[in-house]
Amino acid sequence: MPPTPLLASVQRILAQVAGLLGTHLELFGLELQDALQRFAVNFILGVLSVVLGGLCLALAAVLLLIVFWDSHRIAVALGLMLVYGGAAIGFAAYLRHRLKHAADLFPATCGELARDRKALLHAEDEA
Image (cartoon, rainbow, N blue to C red; front, side):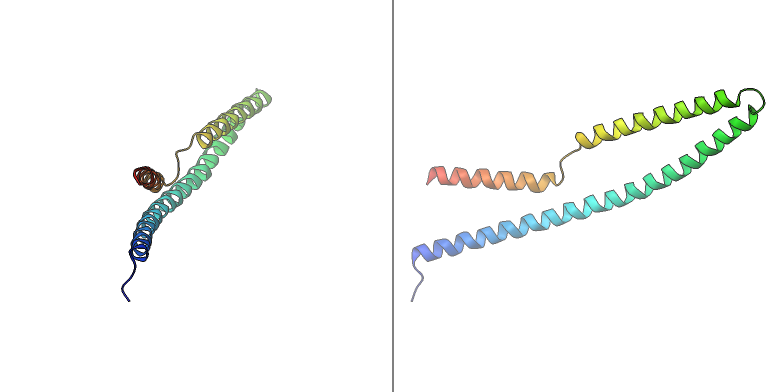
């Protein structure tokens, strides 16, 4: 028994949807892999920067306290505290700004899905 035109149309539509879904999943996988790789590298570099920078600042603070121990140790300690506290507040504000204005994840996948939706809606209008 030959397939009816309606059944053939449904099969063709399902095949196209499966093809689109496969393409979008492949694109999503590539973007996810790229995002994870960038995150891992940035995380490692960030941790190294924080640890080494913290050690440098701690040693600089100790050196300043040793140099001014007899004359101005309280003023130097207070100044260091204010500088470090101000820097911490500034970096926290900058981080908050970056997180609030971060770029969208998976822009190519979202763009493809939007184009597909627009094409499907346009096809419905013509039918």
